[in-house]
Length: 336
Image (cartoon, rainbow, N blue to C red; front, side):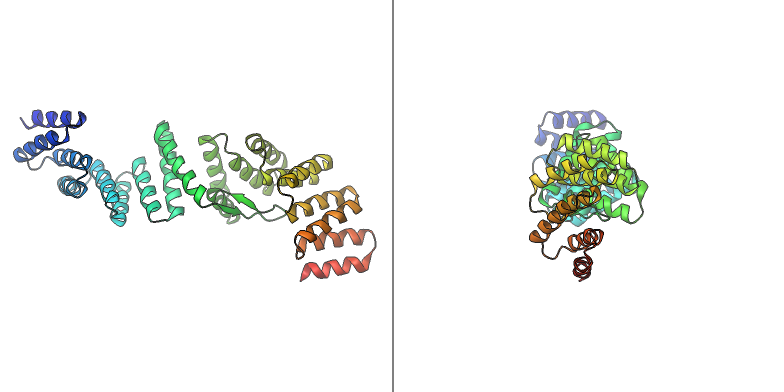
């Protein structure tokens, strides 16, 4: 008998007749007080009516009967998030993960909870894990929702990507900044996996291509790096990092004409970037066009009078021109 009434309760819920559903679920509970699904169903109906606290009571009762009831943990976590009980939301999501660490909705819930705490890094990490799992399950809709949440967070809080060894600084996503930090700490396999995942999810992510190009350059894979910068520029023809770093690589490979073209393009977008002038000056220097190189270093110093790299590289040019006093002065200024 209780099963028949339970089926009627579920049907009422599906028809969005929540008041009637609550009555039917309550009748089931009167017959069988240990019917966990009935408490859960009644909780859902109460939640849909906006009775969040009463819903939490029913979910808690369902969990008292069945401590491994994942759906009840998820529903209770969502209800607790609605009443701003963030720490308990996180606790419920973590309990789900302890039972099944491949349950994508738990990571999505964690992402939302951390986002409300303004813990952007953990929010992104959990939305990313949720997106990965949804992608594996071919649930494109929920995968996209997780990715949209990541992009919304990143649009509010972007950061600069710090790149050493002649790779210059520019604005990029927090996610990509974290990837570069992981690389610098030696987690090369993790970095490549993250970037490949990002490009699997969004094959037109220009910043992911640019970041992978930077990583490949650091690993000495010049042709692979250029290929990635080409892709980045295909999807965003104003990506300064891609132009600048492709120019640096082309210069090192002896393609001076291509390098100058890339650095010219970067300067058209950002004409007050002293480091791009330094990069173009280095290319002119390597071409043997010393006067053109000096002009670029001087322009860099007009923009930033304390640009040590401009002093240092101009010093190299002066030493090649055997103007040793000027060279020494520049080296000393670079060392300040």
